[in-house]
Length: 473
Image (cartoon, rainbow, N blue to C red; front, side):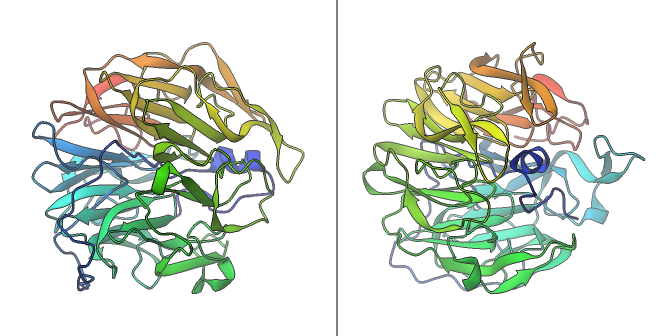
């Protein structure tokens, strides 16, 4: 089942309203893998193995319980447990929770559907069978991937554009984690429909949807035309391929249609769609322009982490300051200055064509941009969020009085970063319209949209403030 539209439509606004994103959620630490850079690639398995991995979440340290959590771009969440297992919850129409859709324990109502339609879901965390020694997990739109301590990558869920990296594509659910044929990895990242892995040798390989060059390949060089069953065919890469021109990479992050990496000296390079200036190279391009090769952002060095949102990107510096660039129509940059931009149509939107400092976000330890909102963990352990808030995804207790607009769509938003009332946290993740945090005691609290059970508290109710997810250590 294709959850959201995959191609950019006639206008940017129409795409943004209907789009999901991949939320890169890089932390200040990398998952620990016990693989030297000279180790040969692990032997691929035909089915599930003993592994898992995600988009740069902490794998060691902290209390027993959950060590990393990742929120999906459509409506599911996964967590890595201190013992190396993985539990997932939320939407399960593609087997993205690691169990067959028919084996789901609940049916959740699709919002605003008329007549009401339902999809398989789990409202509390459930074990993903066949995984062990997991240090990292990443989630996309209907798919999930995991990284194990020995550097192996396993993926499951939707594979309609080859995002599982198995060398094929089809519209059937793939609930069993399958090992990707890949040299040992140290980090993984998922966009909405594409996946990337940072290998221990400092190179990057990507696979999945490549309509806009987001896998780092010229679309003409990919291995297939993929049709996910929605009548829209696009270029896709169904098995991992190296992104050219990269070496010494220390971190990778994936947005909906773009990807960025951090390299030597804190330099950031990005590739893929640039219709909202999300590549940070000082310009906007229409949707026919493909940037398949990495390009340096306009403020190229001095960063310690990079984090991609849906159509924007942010970078974290060693002093705890944050710079962002790209689309800012929901106020997800907080009080950062932006300008009117235009790309390939008559539509005008707020954006920053090059990195700008976010003045109301300082002392940041970890940053998580999402579809239309951003959250951050401060060095003090506090959590702050800004952006769209119509489904309570900022965790502030109410939607607030401020309004933002996107074409003819108006919605509640908060244009300044505001404090979330929550005990001390060490990581935060955001999905389309929900957010979750791992506390220093290893427990998880989530807030925002809950209609697919992505909060994990046993209900399908939106939560205005953080609530504990059930069935976690």
